[in-house]
Length: 467
Image 1 (tube, rainbow, N blue to C red):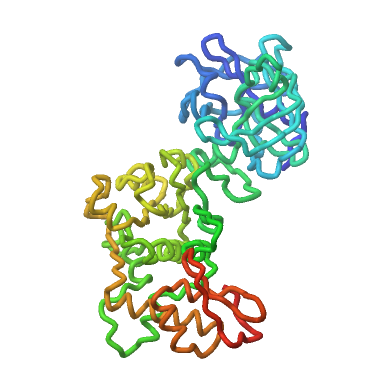
Image 2: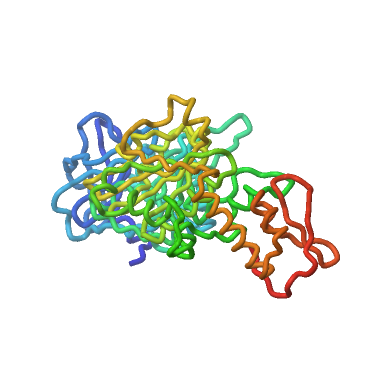
């Protein structure tokens, strides 16, 4: 269903609250109406629906607010009225990701204007802006006709024929008249994350979720530390080394005594499985000395979790409060939040599972993090909660030494086939030497963690894998 300017009016309502007039629009056939929270003053709330000719001369109907978000933050409210007339209809809703530079249109009720409201046309400049609180905003340009009274009006993308947002505010201009013709709105896909399941809102999503700043899906995560030299941890973080799992290592050593070796599948079963033990665990923390492979193991566990239909999100250390993601969480979805270098994260809290999870909406939350042994031993912030499992990586443990040798040999064999003993011994000592890079005159050097030492091989096969 596509909506035109003319048809839009049949889904518009005038919101009246203690003498204040604003705008709202119908978002479900069951009488749910979306508007801005700041339109509601006190408990005297009513709406006026259009008649069959589009006039707003009907009696004011009482409306009950059933959901709201504070006006100084997300600023929206859902109202409920009974028995919508047949000539009105809910408006089709869509995410704003494809609306860049599209023409937009709204209908609102300014204080100076026709009693039936007026229309306003503008350009949708940027649907990916952020408020000072980190919440998504839509920037509108050439919006001269949007004035007070348009708050809560739908943002209709005229190209798509769908409502992609709701007008929220007109910014103050400075002495240079900047932002004079601008306005801002709230994306519908953002609002829907809170409302769609409870109120049966149907919102088309043209693209991926636009997560708040500081949170990225694991498939979009990138190195957070940069350096002029190519360091081993850069390779580990950016996946330029193939990953040889501990599960693969254990299978390759079948019949041999490899001690109590960690297996990724078993850890994920304990953390994310359906057994009673998994349901009790809030998360897991991988601890160990620097360079032992905590980050790579954590990220690979995250990727494996995504294959188990978990939504895996990497949290940036600059994010101060993870509660900002709560409106984005979808019903009937499982989320795993990942924290690299726990000592740098102020947003981490062992109780985050209780804060973010919503059993009534079937939203499940688990945590996965890593930290150095020094942080664990010294920090009072390290969670002592018995439902956080600690995974210790001790590079001197026999099982870890055997695994490390297996990984190094596997990497080298993937490049050069049979591995000279001198190269294997060197790479076991420092795994960075297992990362080859092209050198001059047909030679190839093995990169170390920030040092310039190199070793060469006599020949390089024509066919080799790219790390």
